[in-house]
Length: 341
Image (cartoon, rainbow, N blue to C red):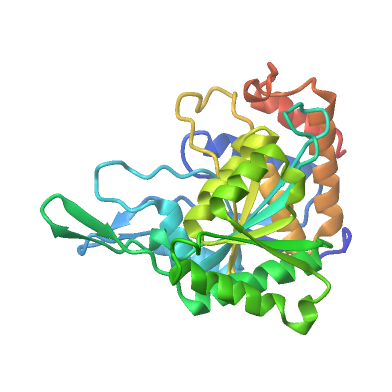
């Protein structure tokens, strides 16, 4: 779908720290590309309810539910004040059950590997992050790992659908069912069930223990294509994958919900030490925006922005400090915009 795509309004959550700078860079680049996108800018300030739970402002909930699509910068969760992670709160609020992280080597940016091209898909709602913890006795705490058939089937189905839709060849289920026989065993059973469905027969299917996956990832990442896994494994492995291609500053991310809601985000931190100094690298949020455009089927605009970003990185003249250059965020942004005009 080219420039005739219908305009969409997107909820934009700039976030904290460098969030406003990199969100502003994305807006400028989208404008230069004439992306058919309008922005509904929302601030997220955590609300602590009387029972101790954390909630996000109702205006943000209404905006995301109305537009069904969002782009989010990094959020800071107050430490030691009883607040739950704002990112976790967003996932729970909108039932964003699948986290998708494409990870690919970028031409012109040297890393130990130049052949990385994989996607991690992480179940986003349960596992060790279910928040079920209690004190058994003094000095002894227990944390419950929650795995359900419903959530496992849902993320497995998403992973195979994603692989088919994006021309991928193989889905690998990551687990530790040799130790957690019942919880990870259920997750693995669901992945096998989905792999055996007629529509998935053209896709190869593998299973690998999480420890073996980490070992093989840092030795030969080209062995992997699409990887699907429970929550904690996905959190760890997706960051490991990011490290193979240059870090979280180059890695896009998207969260897909059950009710048609999708929120795309930069997964790096708020970097308060450089906030307001025009030093931030907007690539991760920008490429997350590209993922968002593809999700909205604005493929032409997505491809143009993506090509401009890769061209600037390949050229190497306008890289920010974290990428080994001396350019400011505004310099990088202007270089991408110039390639779109």
